[in-house]
Structures are given as C-alpha cells and as structure tokens.
Length: 182
Image (cartoon, rainbow, N blue to C red; front, side, top):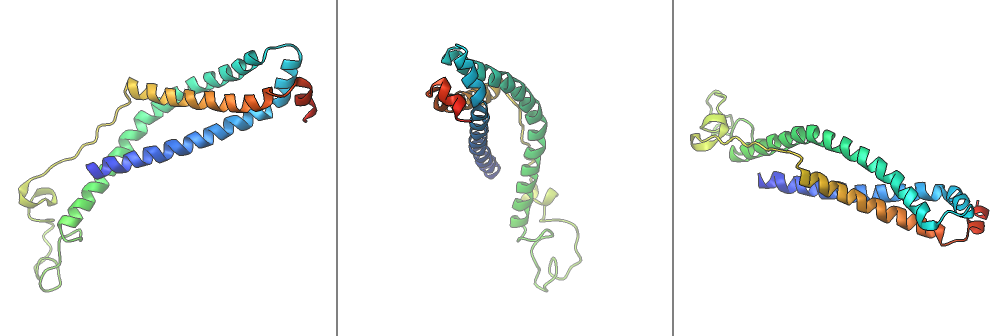
C-alpha cells in the first residue's frame, strides 16, 4: 500500500507542476492577445487597476466553473484509478511471493509444482497468500472540502500571478504605445 501511495503522490505532484506551467502560460498569452483592448480602455480613461480587476474577474468566473467540473470528475475518476493501482500492486506482490510466476515457482522437474499438474492454487493459501491469510486492500478516495479549498487556492494563486505578470508588462506602457504596438 505504501508503494501505491508513493506512486500516486508522485503523479499528483508531476501533474500539478505541469498544470501550473501550462495554465500560467495560457493565461499570459490570452492576456497579451488582449493588448489592444486594454490599450483602448486605458486611453478612454479607465484606471489601470480597474482593467486588471476586470481581467481577473473574468478569469475568476471561469475558475469557479472549472473547479466545480474538476471536483465532480475527480470523485468519479479517482475511485477507478485508485482501485487499478491497488490491483496492480496486489498482483505484483503475489507474483513476487510466488517466485515471479503467476502459477507459483517452477518445480524440480521444470514444470509447475515439481512435475505435478497445475492445481490452480497460487501459493498454498487462499487467494495466493502464504499461510492462509488473505488481506484485501481497499483504497478509499473522497474529495473533502479541505482538498477542494486547496485546489481552489492553488488555482486562484495561478490566476493572480498570471494575470498580474501579463498585465504588468502591458500596463507599464502608455496607451499610445500599446495601440501603436500592433
């Protein structure tokens, strides 16, 4: 079970880092594409903080919808993926306990069980465990409000940093420069 948890943790970190980079770059590109719109708004007298707040508000509305979809999809998908990981780990442990072969180790005569016919028993005990002990591993996955809040907080931070970075590079210019840049 520890191997499954460690593997799942590594996958979560890898996907999170990749997601942060991808989302940040997409938001920066979208904000920079709106350079002309920002220039027109500033030229018409809108304050720069108000323009940035508008960009951020639009992104926040999208973030709320996406967080709802991610929460619903995460609950459904995490159970299936978790059970597959547990099943894979259980299969690997059973194979290693049985000499690396699904039917047990090779016997003295080169065949399964020392020249005897295969019995379907995978290692002396029920369910292929040794000593007659079966241990069913079950992985329970659930999205808690704390996990959803953490996910929302990270997404909020990505949005703030991305919009601020892209808007800063545009808004430090004068409206005339912004409009002439195209």
